[in-house]
Length: 116
Image 1 (tube, rainbow, N blue to C red):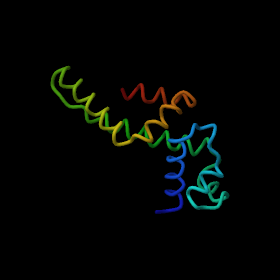
Image 2 (cartoon, helix red, strand yellow):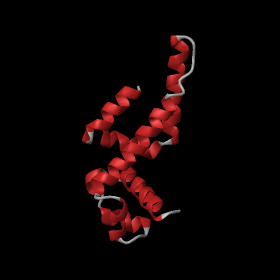
Image 3 (cartoon, rainbow, N blue to C red):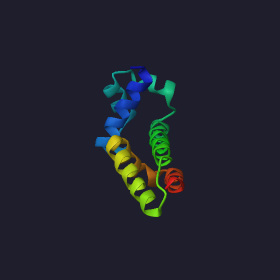
Image 4 (cartoon, one colour):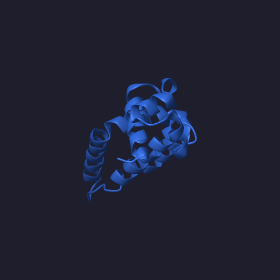
């Protein structure tokens, strides 16, 4: 796993367990087993890292919802519901992070509304 991937995974774990305001870059670096300064090679600050995670899940949700199938409204609605359940199960941690971030960074809330 690359250093950046370790940082991202550590951030996902921490933001999933702890609210955004209570997570520090120092905690993330410790969990990723990298020096605190190395994070700045990839991300300007905690906000940029958090928004990177929001970007990841936004793209995954959009991609998932592109696969709505069905001829009738009912079939499309069932497909939409199934896809929402799938993405929630597949991306449980990122979905929880997104729920906190969608109001903190409103552009992601607006983006997801367009996808829905």
